[in-house]
Length: 326
Image (cartoon, rainbow, N blue to C red; front, top):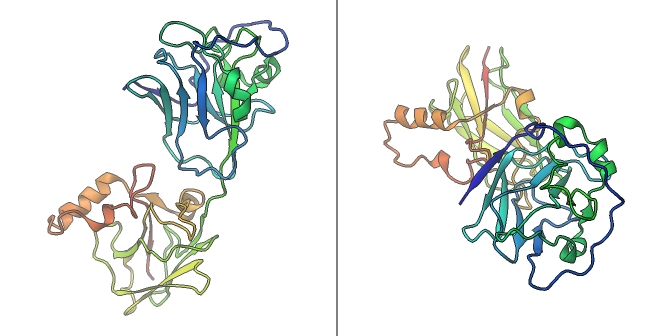
């Protein structure tokens, strides 16, 4: 399976000044040509999971060339920045999948842009229009491309992108659903002079699942021992509170660890990154978890803090917030 990495900004590899006519549909295509069968999510889709992948399916084997991009923002105006991630073909080259490096931004329009010059393995141009409009596709006009910055769209006006009808391919715009966010952590990461008798509170903006992938450690990271105490949800399950069994030690660092797989009551992964880093949060790297295992002497075998509820889509094991008591 061939994998190609795309990063925002790499599209700025030069532009071609191309005059095109107004976009119009092509005549009916031969039945034996390659067509675009499906786009997931399709154009107009709403409430798309920010953790979803993008798939394009064709009815014949395709060339390995990939004239495709995924942008934030809709297609009614200039394309927004490209989303960083990996495009890859199935072995039979009939399905192309995009896996983002990070979950998509929540409550945000995203646009899949498929070049009008995409070709199958025999060198034939792919028919986008036969099914494209029925799946919410829209032709990408010259006006859209002119309104796009050179940095974003500089390389998207060449042969692989231009369609014989004068367009620059087809776009499919979808909207991601609002994600449940971690609103507040008290004490915040980096805070000092914290009252040793104060409880620890985590506040979310939606009702949460009853599962609690959280831990409270003595020390500056996840390697320290867990503090004895009790976690409890508020009645509406939007706030989680830890009450230690005894007052915390004075002038000591403590770390709150929130799993990257925490879910709300609807089963959606919580967005830790939206506010987390501004509250002093740090992503928990695999190296941190390996250090934890080494500290434990590997006596636990597979660490229970490396399972599904702890693992984040960005490859981390959630987020930590470290503070120091008075």
